[in-house]
Image (cartoon, helix red, strand yellow):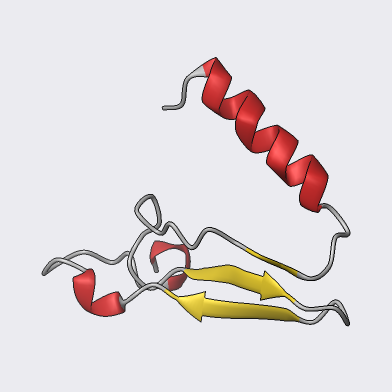
Length: 70
């Protein structure tokens, strides 16, 4: 759950980055499930680069690294 202030801050960031180029993300993966892919940067030619959160962080019996929990 996010506070309204955090939500507004996040939306402003998303609005700023929409169709933007030549930037890098914060790479804070603390809220992502293990195995999740996330945007790392967009270069000057609008190419998008992704990374994957370490799937080894998954606990035994956790299906966080499986698509749609299947």
